[in-house]
Amino acid sequence: MKVKNWMAKDIITIGPRASIDAAVKLMHQHSIRHLPVIEDDSMQGLVTESNLRQYFFPSMVNELSISDVMIVNPITVDPNTSIDSAAQIIHKYKIGGLPVLEKRQLIGMLTITDILAAFIELFGLLKGSSRLDINLSEKGGTLDDVLRLIREMGGKVISVGVEALTSKKKVYYIRLEKGELSSIVRALEDEDHKVVSILD
Image 1 (spheres, rainbow, N blue to C red):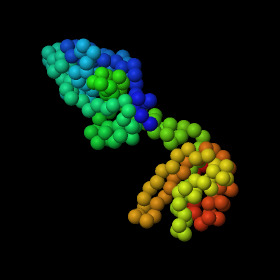
Image 2: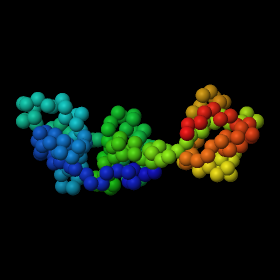
Image 3: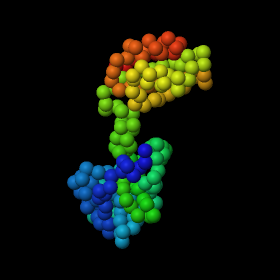
Image 4: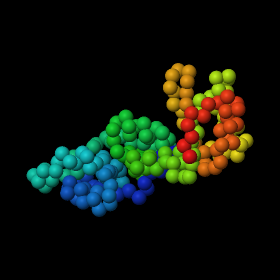
């Protein structure tokens, strides 16, 4: 999944000579928290709701312009950056959004909300689904064996997650489209895989 498929393309921007008050009103009007600062079709910086808060004093609001308070070199991403990488950047730098630049031109804005929507889609969390939590057979079973068996039993896999409990023991979280699970569970257990839990 690429950033370009999830970013907002209809971007609200502001000029560097605009007032802090104008920025706040724009954010409230459009229910956004990030405003790229644009001049002559070039991105000059970024203002965010959180970085503006420190200037919410009457004297500062009246005396300062956006160019005085903007983040001059904000962290940005390319439209072909993966959603996974963008999520890691946002988590690492504790920021709420990323301007998307292509050849130094602003073409989009990616926020935490956009990333959450992408992961919800990826994991099928809003679809009717079930989840099997499985320990693989200690006799040499593989995840491929489990997925093949599920498909053979008519199951449709949406996503697979894994948690390493120890260096040798893992739990696989297999999300399936809603359907009959008892025959799948029996088939897995017949192959010595352990179904730890079923979320239906």
